[in-house]
Amino acid sequence: MIDIRNLVVTFGRGAGAVQAVRDVSLHVSAGESFGLVGESGSGKSTVLRVLAGLNDAWKGSASIGGLSVAARDARFPRLVQMVFQDPYGSLHPRHTVDRVLSEPLAIHGIGDANERVQRTLLQVGLGPAFRFRYPHQLSGGQRQRVAIARALMLEPKVLLLDEPTSALDVSVQAEILNLLRKLREEQGLTYLLVSHNLAVVAHMCDRLAVMNRGAVVEEMDVETLRRQAPREAYTQQLLLASRGYDRAVAAGMLTYD
Image (cartoon, rainbow, N blue to C red; front, side, top):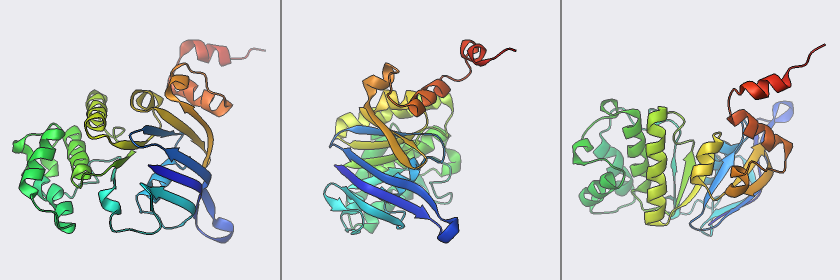
């Protein structure tokens, strides 16, 4: 469903140029949930922005469902949609939920807006009472549910998820992740999930790739991650960091004269 070959993304020119993504190749099957992990600045979100058509400064090849990202095919928005990290910034503050969800249908000339909006709100766990509210009248979790509903309005086959829970309270994160798992099972969606949280990736994904300084350093299935048996030293360090502060680990790193 997703095919990326030798992707290179460079920002800037000349001596100040920065290669944010370096020769990345990934392949994600239909119906699969694939994770991209790495520390901040590793290039994982840049890969998503290329696939979403939000970045033109790239080389290589990238296609989704057989459609080239570079071709800007008119069918593309109905094939792939993106859910952004910040539900506070991704919704227009002066647009009601109804307008947010109806707008993609109007742009693409799709009818039955009333029925589709109501159905999609129910799919994401929001009832009719939320339809004419504004973003400031919603909690963070509710806003992200609206953002997910907006991504589903055109009935895409692929969702690009850019850290969809990192801006939410811990108590709400599990609800959103479980909703995404439910939607994937019900609608046969393909996910490409970016996260720095290995626990989230272990919960959501079938396979994952680890990025460091713009390059993929390792691919593995999620069982290897759960066994904490990666091949590369960098991935081992990520696993160690994901455990947070550990008194025993900290004590083992101390040296004495």
